[in-house]
Every structure is written in structure tokens, then in C-alpha cells.
Amino acid sequence: MSGAPNPYGDDDRPQAYDPAAPLTATGNLRRRQVVSKLTEYMATGAAIAAIAVLVIVVYAVVSRGASAISWDFITKSAPEGVAPALIGSAIIVGIGTLIAAPIGVLIALYLTEYAGGRAAAFVSLTMDVMNGLPAIIVGVFVFTFLVEVNGSFGLGQAGWIGGVALSIIMVPLIARGTQGVLRLIPKSQSEAADALGVARWRTVLSVILPSALGGILTVTILSIARAAGETAPLLLVTSIGPIDHVAVNPFEALANGPTRIYTLSEEANPAGFTEAWGLSLLFISFILFASLGARALLARSNRKTSS
Image (cartoon, rainbow, N blue to C red; front, side, top):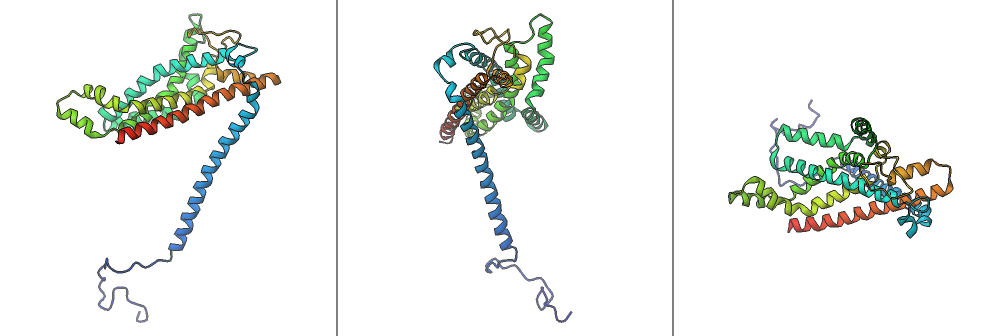
């Protein structure tokens, strides 16, 4: 049409792009700015909401459980205190850590140092799936394959079985976290060892692991804090432990904090509610301080690794 402008100029050929030409704003600039600001406000609001929820939870636990905290509450057995539950939880979580830590670190080493292609993808997918498993499914699995088998020997529930259940939850956390730490180790260190003819396994033991030890410890602490509050598996595998005295035999059912809190919350007893809030305060304090300490240790490890 004669009245329409020709986008190719007078000679009907595309015009050459001029990189020195000034940029011209399009009609979408205003819309992009609005979308950018809206996304920023939504992200900020989500972060504030998450912090607000944490503050509300901590305030509720502290305000209702602080009155129960005393030296006798921590060191004595029921009905005055919760020492059996605290010690039982420490034993169960300790067993889970002893099982999960070496397995998780070895999986991370396999993924970063040895595996490749489909094998690494399959193992990574397995860790992600395990990380997303509901805790109750882990509890049912362990109950079916360990508690029932243990019951055939006249034993049934046991603290070590609770440790196995928690280790299943901890393994993918330690593996994926350690994998991230190992990726921060400069490649020049392992390359220098390879250039000197050092065997691969010796390089891993003498160069890579010592450099990543701080980060691995941090990841392990975070996984302990995550597993310490799990209730569903322990309800199935070690929920009938004694609360009137401290038991330390892992081959018997051990009292533990999560199941004790659940039991007290189901009783129509105001004193039991106060005890449950106090025990909750002890656990949330441990989780908060362990997480903060682990973050500080991780920051220190990252500074040493990058320097």
C-alpha cells in the first residue's frame, strides 16, 4: 500500500543494525517495571510472613513453657521432670547420626568424585525422593521390617530402631549438604595431588575431606536439628519407654521428647500441658541454637575454603 511506511527503507532491503544507535524505549517498559516491583514486593512479603510465623511460634512456646523450666524439670524423672525423655532422645539421635553421617558423606563423595552421567543422576534423584518422603512412611517402613521382626524375638520396640528411622531421614540431608560443600573445594587442590601421582582415594582422605570437614560438621548439625523433632517414626518404633526412671539401653524402648510431648498433649491434664510446653521449649531452643551455631560454622568454613 502506498500510504504505509516501508520498514525496509526506500530500496526494500533490510537495514543494517547499528550498535552505536541510541536505545529507544518500547511500549512494554512500563509494564515490565510494574511486574518487577510487584515481584519484589511479593518476595519481601513472603519473607516477612515466614519470619512472623517463626516469631509467633517461638513466642507462644516461650510464654507457655517458661514457667515449667527448672533444674528439677531437666534433671529428674516423671512426674517432676523430663530427664528420661531428654536422655532417650539424645541416645536415639546419636545412634541415627552414627549411622547416617558416614553413609551420607560417602554418597556425597561418590556423586562429586566418582559418579558421572546416568549413575549420578539416578543417585541424586534417589536422595531427592528420600528427602521428600513423609516421616510417617519412614516410620511404617521401619516398623514393618524391624519392629515386627524384633518382636519375633520377644523384644519389639527399641531405641536403636528409632535411630535407624531417624538415620533414613538424615541420610539425604547429609548427602546433599555435603555434596554442596565438596563442590566449594577448589579443583586446584585435587589437580595438584593428581599431578604428583597421588592415588585418588588418598587424595580424598588427605586433601578433600580435611578441607571440607567444617562444612560437613555443619551439615551434620543441621540434620541432627532436623531429625531431633521428628515424632511420627518414634511413635511407631519406640513409644513405650519408661518415664519414671532414666533408661539408657538402646535395645529396649526408650522414652523420648517428641512422643512424650504427643502423649501429654492428648491427656486432659493442665499440668501435663504445661510440661509439654516446657519440653517443647527445650527442643525448640536446641534446634534454634544448633541451627545458628551451624550457620556460623558454615560461614567460617566458607571463608577458609575461599581464602
